[in-house]
Each structure stands twice: as structure tokens, then as C-alpha cells.
Length: 407
Image 1 (cartoon, helix red, strand yellow):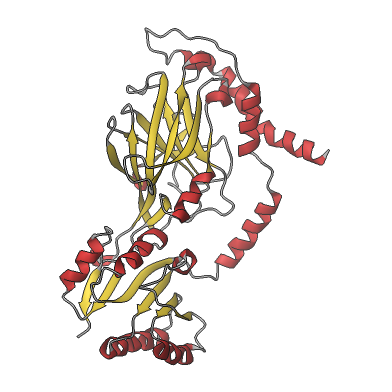
Image 2 (tube, one colour; image 1 turned 60 degrees about the vertical axis):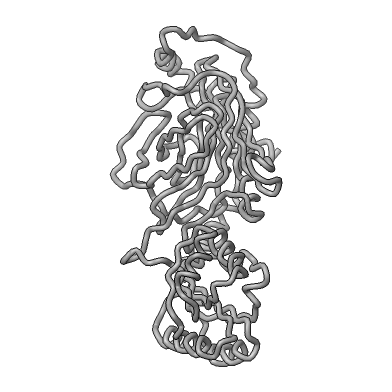
């Protein structure tokens, strides 16, 4: 009985939403183009209920967890610095010891993680820093082993010893994918970020009586090697029953995302038709609520890099622009949505939209970080080699670094 009651309570917002949309149908019909005759098709009530249940699950345990996390986060630093030391060169080791001595002496709210590949230097640093609660020292051959993603969590600054060797490429790839030095990869082809695609679920116009249908699949080997993966958002859109949109949306985050230090969202996509899509951000809990939108165009059968500055996203509610005095709450992002819609904003139509099949390949979605003062890179390499050689290695993984001679 309790389960049935909770399920019914979760469906009430959507039922209210459906009724409110029904009252607006006359307004929606006028958005049809002159040569388009509105049609009626059988509505899938079961799919409607399934969608409602998915996006409105009662989650009392998650609410308690969020409260506890929010209290804990008040005293927890948001970012960390990684120091990766080879330790084979005595001059380089001495420089890192001076850096660590300086950092440990300063009053700093940041945390520091030290990866040391040299056992003798590791023991020396561990003894020196054992009373420093904001320092963690680990013995790890970081150039030759795969670094666990959790070791790079919340890292936004890195200092590492470099010889300009190709063995450093994997380390730099890990930095780009799992840390925040160049931004933050939310969804991509690497195993860690590939799993994140499971957060996206279909949310189509069935919620307002329509019949459009979509899905998201992870597909291997699209335009590339069999080892690569892309997410494919595909389906069929229809104007029947005054509908006309298909979308995918992330289920509500257990813990809201903090985008305070990021300036833009970047998508790498390829569409089979060259349609215009909407990217949507929800900065508060709730299913049918105001959100922040920005449309973007694609080119048919061409990969496109789409950069959407967060400052250019505007508030929208049910395809109508609204006023907001506060701006996006970047510190509390609960959900994201990607939509192909017949409707743009305020009654305007999407000129690229047409009924039928669509297919959008998404290679990655990532956040771009606000550049630091002086446009300095977030990664510093200490090297005995020429700095150009070290930077050339970083370019192979498209990562900006600064290089400084250890001499």
C-alpha cells in the first residue's frame, strides 16, 4: 500500500502537467505551419506513466543524503593540487622538496596529493608531512601505471616532473579525462565517462499527449576504430496530437553538480539531418519547472564542436521565455536535457525541423573552465628537457601546459 501511495503521489505532478498542456492545445495548434494539418494518433498512456514514474520517483533517502552532504561540504575544500614526482633526478627532487615545504608552511585551505615514484623520496616526504592533515603522500609509479580516476577527483592544478617522453601521454590523458585541469569531462568514450551515459533517459512529447519516440544507445566504432564509442540519440518525431519533440534528460542527480568554476559547455556531435537542437540545464529540483536553454545548429553528417557559454543561456518555461533576476545557479545543477523540438521559443518554429527519423551522434559533453589570471595553464611541467618538447607531448592529447626548466 505504501509503494502504491508513493507511486501515485509521484504521478500527480505529471498528471497536472498533462491537464495544463491540454488546456493550451488551442494555443499550440496555431504554431503549425500553413501546409501542415494537425492529426490525431493513438496515445500510449502506458509509456506516459512509465516516463512519469522514472522522473518523479520518491527519493526520501537521497534527500537526507543531500542534507548531510551539504553540511559536510561547508568545511571540505572544493579543489586540490596534484604533485607528481619522478624523483630519479636529484635536482628535480630538491626543487619539489622546496615547493612542498613552501606549500606546507603556508596557511592553505586546499588539499594536496603527492604521487612519488621514488621509494626513498616517498618515505622522506611522508615523514615530513605526517602532521599535515591537508597533505596525502602516495608511492606510485604514475608514468607507467593507470591512475585510478578517484585519485584525480577535484584536482584542478598539477605540477609534475617531465622528460618529454611518450610514456607521459597516458598520464596526461588521465589528467584531461578525470581531473578538472582543462575542464571536466561529463560524458565521453573513456570507461569512466562512458558509464555516465546511463543517467540519460528518454523524455518525449508523450507527456503532453504526443507520439514522438526516442532512445539513447552506446554504439562502438562510429566513424572510428572499434575501440571508440559514441552515444546515439535517435528516434522519430511527429506533430500528431499537437506534439513535436523528442528529448533525453538525465535523471535527477543524487547530489547537485557545482559548475561555479566553469564558463561553458562543449558538445562534439554529428547529426544525420543538420537539425537545430536545444541544450537545457535545470538548476533546481523538480520535473516540470523553469530551466535554462540555448539552441545550437548542426551540419548534416559532419562532426561539429558546439560551445555554449553558460552566460548566454536564458530562462524558459514550456518553450516560453521568462524573466529571471538571479541568473543560473551554477552551484546547484540537478539535471541536463537535449531536445529536438518543432518549437523554438515564444511561438516561433524551428525552421530545420521536419517529421520523421533523426539520429544525433554525441562523442562527448564537457565543461570548460574559467581561465586563471594571465591565461596561465593549470598544469606545470618541471623539466630538464627543452620546454617545446614537453609541450609537443601535451599537444598530442590536446592539453595546454606550461613548462619550466628544472635547472
